Length: 468
Image 1 (spheres, rainbow, N blue to C red):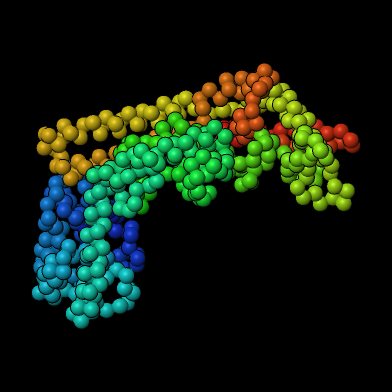
Image 2 (image 1 turned 90 degrees about the vertical axis):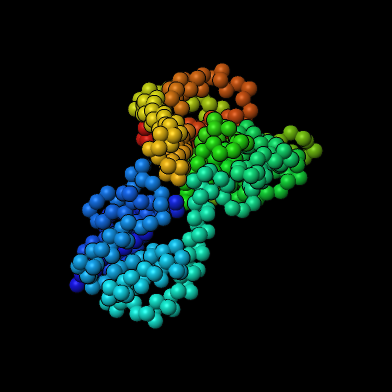
């Protein structure tokens, strides 16, 4: 049984399948029976459509026109060697309107060639005229959906905002987001507070106290991770287009926000925003219970005392509490003694070389992007193709910049040497100590021996070879 397949892909919002069209198809078994595959690209001519075995991806110089060369080639081949059926993904692949689909169905009917759909069972008979008529109503809805997708794809290629309300802190302009002078300072203040203290819940409380603005934890986290506040646009496809509007959160600060979020992800939710630097890090070596900070005071006295107590000690005689300040001081002493040895004995990645490699890729794509206007002026590219290529390059630049921002600092050994000095920790606040602890420590184990105790530190560098 000889079956040939046909598909039309709109490059503005669809991913180009491979030559055998096994991508984005529901019934792969039906397509493997096709002896030849014809593929057009919506609006592309010249080298636009290619049968199986030829180039499946259009060249940058392909020009936009409404005809479908591969469909015309399919009809010519069917006149010379008629197949038993023509297989399509959906009726909408045959045309952009009901009239166009009807004309192409009439062409197949005149040749006596039945039509089959890919999502039909392999043993299902070809579509009859009654089946096709019943699907015309669904076809109209499908083509309406495609026209909406084409409009959204046009906006995406031209780096225009997606549909919907502008994010808090922005307002809609003609073709981009504009800063809202009323709410943008509030969002900026939220970011600054988070960078200073590293506490999501604390930043949310700060907004409520200073501006009487109530937001949930999920909204606050969405603000911290949203590309929109970094001057980028993100779409439902997951692609990010950089530098499309004014940013509230600069790139350098955004990278620091990402590092704080990754660091807090290893801690219990409440410990991540706790005011004390040891919260969420100390574990009892005897009962393996996490130690939490407890505050006590004497009657009629303002002074308060901090202790570390096991949160859930399973022993009948529970492990006793230890003064918080004593554990803190012992931790600082162990950091100054152990960190230089850990850093010197751990093979660290060549972060500087990795940064240079990614920077070279970014520079290459920026050079390609700068060449597009000249190619357009010389007639090598037409406007729609140049716009599509520019969009692809911008999304690649955003991906590479994200990789560059997530790399650990190149001078990690120098930083470790600095924080190994006892003088460094003098006069640091609890929030500042918390930032450094969570940057280098995975856990603080409190080991007890009789009535004595000591701390043992587990560094993030140990056994991993790099900072997370």
